[in-house]
Length: 369
Image (tube, rainbow, N blue to C red; front, side, top):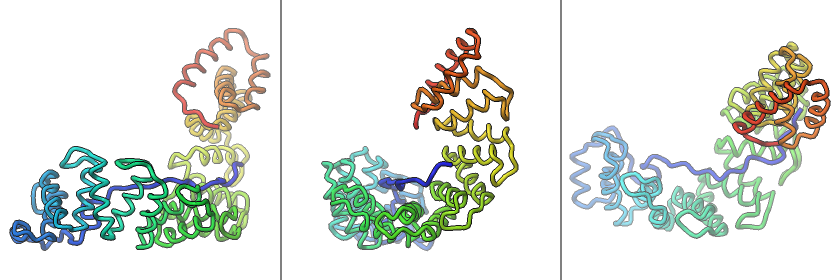
């Protein structure tokens, strides 16, 4: 069975909030368009921001992104941090204005300098990847920290990523774990999953498999596919919980149904061996195929063996050759050896057909070890 992931999924996350995000005035059901517009036209920055938000989401008016930008800009020019952030978002995604990442960064910075946490986070992200600004990971860390210190969970997560990888800071696993925990405590599912991985392997924390399970479960309950897969692993191997193969199958299936190839492979293993489920080689073939179609080379190897032995499928040396060949071409040594043995039992016509079909299949499949 495949083991726990050795590394967390370390991804810099960015998501565009609705344009009211970070704003100092919210669009409310009670907002009266005439009153808001009157105040906005009189120069009230908060009302200009609110009116921009109304046009942005079509609240009480026909949605009009260009009109939203107009009012955001009026408030932003008066120094309203929420409007500056929202204007940055509009430039960032090209709504109501021509997309301009440098202009987006300019407005994010204005808002960030006033302490707007979402703007600090977005500005950090732009420095981390060099979007609209010169790439500068130390600068990214600086802005992530400002937002993280205000409790902004996405920034806390990204701060952890930077420490875990030594990007813009000296690599520090304990510091990474600290920031993952802060985001995890706010319910960030990916941070919870990553924190679980750290407890499972003792990365920046004392190894504690039961604690790992606790965090995996929190993330899994929110639908995090990596955590669901890892719960399958811990129940299958009895790591931090009593071994329970039926429970392992349950969690593998949840991850497999979300399209996670490693979980699909493991479901296949469980059905092939009758672990946690009634043995069913046809069902094993089904799940091996799902993982194989995503480029999982071990699943491809197993699928080839099922065809070679007629297990769960009608024996078919051509199909066996195809899948062993694809796996072998991606570096699976056992598949290469199995292919050599299989070819001794095949006719020249079968080998020619298999080679032709393998070429077509190999071109459309993703490839990973």
